[in-house]
Image (cartoon, rainbow, N blue to C red; front, side, top):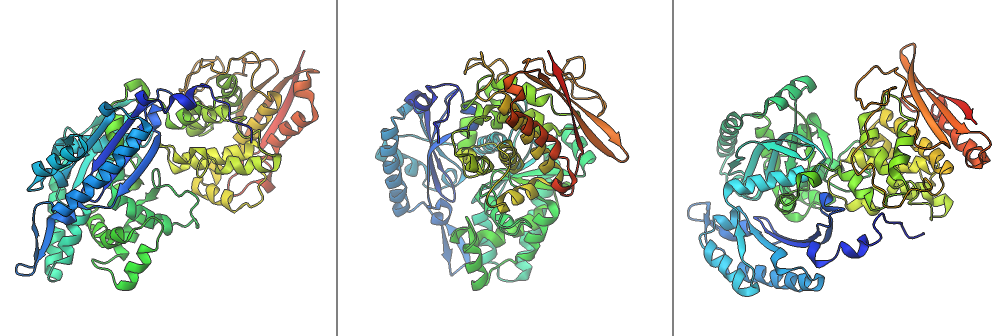
Length: 604
C-alpha cells in the first residue's frame, strides 16, 4: 500500500513529542489503569492513546474481609501486600513513561473512592510517593462525579440525557447536555453506595430472600430521592416527551461488562463492531437481559459468562449484582428510551477537562480523518454535498461527507480488488478502530460509504451485510448512494482538486451546512426544494432535488460536466456516473428504495 498522505507531514513525529504527552494513572476500586495520551492540537479532541494497560488489583476487595462471627464483610486497612503490588506496577509504568519521555509535570496519579475511604488512605498515598516519587491526587466525592461526567462527554460529539457511572463501591447519577463544545450538567452528581463490587458482596451475604428484597427496596428508595434532587434540564424533558423517553448513558466497568453481554446476544451475529463505546440498545433489550439473570449464578452459568468476549471471571461474578441494580433503578428513573455505553471515565474526563471549547466542539469523526486530508478536501466535500437532496439524513452531510472527503484517496495505493474491503473495515479494525468519540452507527456508516466509494465489491459480503443491519435499510441505501457519488468525484479528480494546497483548511474541520437555492446556509425547507449546483470547480457539478412519486420520494440528480474535457468524458468516468443511477434500481435495494434519475448537461 502507498504511504498515506498527511495534511501535516510532520504530524507523525510531532504527535509523540514530549510536550504533547500526558500520562494518567487511575487508581480505582476495581483496578489500576495506566495510559499515555498525545494531546497534539490536530487530534486532541479524540484523545489518541499511545499506551494503555490495567493491573487487576481491587482495592475494594482488599479492604473487606468476611467475618464468620457477624456473617458480614468488615472493612479493614489496605493490606501491605496490596500496597506493594500497586507500587510495583507503578515502578514498571515509570520505566514506560521514561521510554516515551513524558515530562514529570505531565504525569498524574488520580485516586477515587476506594482510596478516599480507606482507613489508611494517607499511609497508602505516602507509600506510593515514597516508592515512585509521584504524589497522588485524591478526588473529592463531588469532583469524582464531575470528572466522570466529562469522560462521558468526551465519548461522543453530542450527549443529551441521563448519565450513570458504575464503580466498584458506588454509582454516580446525573444529567448532561453536551454539544457544540458547551457542557451543562447537574450542579453535583448524586453518589449512591451501590457499586458493582459492593452490591456483589451484599447479595452474596444475604441470608434469605427477605434480605435481598430489603436491599432492593433500599436501592429504589435512594434512587427515587436522587432523581428528585437532580432537577433535570427542561430541554431534556421536552426532548424526552417528544421522543418517548430519555437516553441513558452508561459508563464504568460493571455497565460495560453488561454491554458486552448485550453485544453477544444482539440480533446481528456475529456483531461486527468489537468496541463498546458507542454501542446502543433499546430499553426492552436491556431490561430483558437483566430480568433473565438471577441474584446468583450456577457454576455452569458462571463458566458460560466468563467465556463471553471481554467478560473476565471477576466481571462474570458481578453480573448478577449489575442486573439486580438495573432492574431496580429502572423502576425509579424517568422513562428510558434507549441506553448508550461509554468508554470514557476518569482518565478521559481528566484529559478532556484540559481542552478548550474550540477543541471540544470539533466533531470526533472529522478530526480523526483530518490528518489524512486530501488535496482540496473542503471543496471535494462541497461537490459531494451538492449531490445530496434535502431529504438526506443529517449525519451524512454533517459528519460522513467531510470525513469521506478527507479519506477520498486513502486506499488508492491498495490493489484494486482490495480497496472496497479495506474501506469497509477501516472504522472497526483499521486505522480508525481506536478512535475515541464515535458511535457504532457512525463507524458502520463511514465503513459502508468507503466500501461503496471503491465500487462496493468484496469477496465475502457477510461483514458488509452485518454493518448494514446495524444502521438499518434506509441508512444503508444512503451509504451506497453517497459512496457512488464519491466514486464519480474521485474519477473526475483522481488526485484531488488541482491547485489546492495539501494543508488547505478553508473549511476547517467543521461540518458542512445545507445550502438552499440562493446559496444561504439552511437546515430547513421543503424536501422538494432545488439546491444550488456546486460552483467550486468547472469540471463537474451536481444539482440534487427530491421529487414526489405516489407515496415515495424519487431523487433527481442533474450532473453538469465540461464538454470534451478528458477528465469528465473518459469511459471510466461515465461508468462511475452511470453507477449512481444503479443505486436506485429495484434489484439493488433491500427494504428501502429511492429511485435515482441522473440527468446530464454539458457546458462549453
